[in-house]
Length: 348
Ligand code: SF4
Image 1 (cartoon, rainbow, N blue to C red):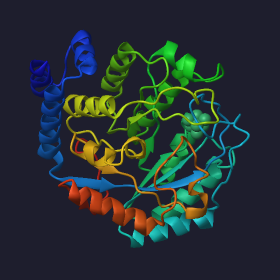
Image 2 (image 1 turned 135 degrees about the vertical axis):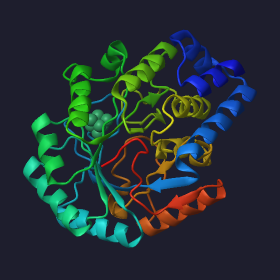
Image 3 (image 1 turned 90 degrees about the vertical axis):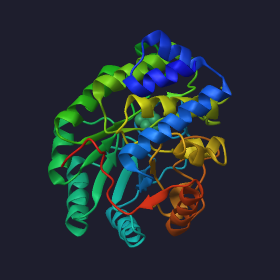
Image 4 (image 1 turned 120 degrees about the vertical axis):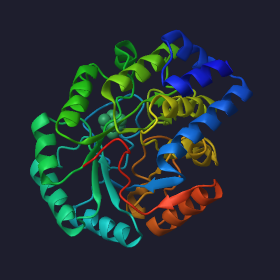
């Protein structure tokens, strides 16, 4: 199996069956070699730098009903909130003073945030913080909406495809949602000049190794600047409440594979990884990850952005969250970068 790691390291690709073999492997020595090679590749392009993204969770309202999500519209127990313009701007102000140079506005698909409102918030942030990157993560919207927000000053857009396998997509989403539309959104975003982040869930219910290979192939077609993957973590008020979550081992294995397949990509050590293991994010950093996303949302709404059970970092102020992550990054042997942190493959 170690030969497959070396082959992926030198050639950035494997056949479908080889990828499946590597994903299914459970040998500790292979896992360690994969980790070493992934770290070597990330250091070649990014040194020891870890980029920070200040996450602002703008709304827990969502018109969609993804079966795995705690803020899906049918969850009547969800405590809903949305931030207004002043609150969002105050998060940015706080974040800027704490050293953040990327703001990520993330939320469910909430029609309250019209193009007009979003564009005016984006323009204001752009004007006040010309040295910062503005990232959006607001789900599926029209090409025209993406165009207007780009024109207003947005730089990046995160939209996980979650699964590129049509059959699995149907089992994880209600009938009115379509994988084709999500793919359309992602290619629209790329064509419009956004730096794009996509990604998938690891260990989702019904997911097979072949589905994961399909995800890797889809990402090769899309060539996003960032790839966010995280273990599936069940939420108690969803139809998947009783399902098993994704494992640390498989998530780390896929992170290592992604780093070798996409050497220059931005790869976050996600909150979900930190949720399933206390040292999950540190292990992610050591396996090729180079981004973390501390939370800048006001503390009183944190718990309400309740995507999955036991989500970490719901009780800390932004400054605490930032310092805790700084310590974790340094203790893992890396350094906090105080810059926008664009993808090594992307020139603006
Ligand atoms: S996963 Fe996203 S789109 Fe789906 S219900 Fe949750 S917030 Fe809405």
